[in-house]
Amino acid sequence: MISLTRHILDRQQSHPDHTGALSAMMTHIALCGKLIARDLNQAGLSGLLGTTGTTNVHGEQVRTLDERANRTFVDVFEESDVVRVVVSEEMEEPFAIKRAQGSGTYALFLDPLDGSSNVDVNAPLGSIFSIHRVGASGSILKAGREQVVGGYVLYGASTLLVYTCGDGVHQFTLDSAVGEFFLSGSGIHIPPRGKICSVNTGNQSKWPGAMRKVVEHFQMGGDETGPSRTARYSGCLVADVHRILWKGGLYLYPGEVKKPAGKLRLMYEAAPLSFVVEQAGGLGSTGEERILSLQPRMPHQCVPLIIGSREDVEFVEQCLQGGSR
Image (tube, rainbow, N blue to C red; front, side, top):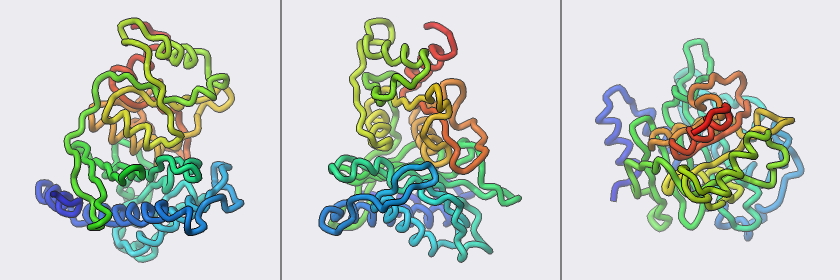
């Protein structure tokens, strides 16, 4: 039984250039995951369901648990002296950590509670995190390939923490009786092609014609790309990508004709999940370029997302760029 704490300390010893900052940050993230998992387990009994009556920076209704999860991350990281700033889906402006202003060299990007519309029906939810070094000029907007750590927590039948710091993908399962995450998967490798196509087809009337044809192709199947794909879409990005990480296939959230940038956020959704998937041998793309190569222009920037098995993503890229296979 290898705990998350022991695992991270062992990784630091094998990478002398890593300091105790990694251990501190991951310990804080694990604590947030435990606290949010507890809140979700008790939500129906603690008056935490429903909405707050406000909207976030993206114009989406804020649920009580969205606000609670965001507050949990902020409260925990306010005790950090290595994370200088927190950027969250639930906060319009970056939040400066006062304690770390003289010492902090990292920025934390968050989707504190992904899939929060699932809360009221007890379906899976997640938290997504990404850590970057703050630039010498104080810049926090960096391409995804420069991430120090990327990963997520999945709240479902069990609570899982999955992360990478560029040396493979590691999964931990929370033992709630002990209050600790233990290693339950390491060196995870996504199949080069899969049988799942995870996409919200309710939006297909809004997609460009090329994307509609791609999805229709996967629904029909029958050529060298394999049989028709199984449709799986939970409304929780973390849950859908986690399934594909283990089983292979595709997750698609395309841009729309009237909204070509799509809905998903680059810095704290698309980039950290692409970091994880690419470390497992998969690929994350907009359809035109790799997610990890994009230079962000703003903290809450949106991008289309095509992520999953490498051969499947490359096939979609070819189709969207007018090629054939």
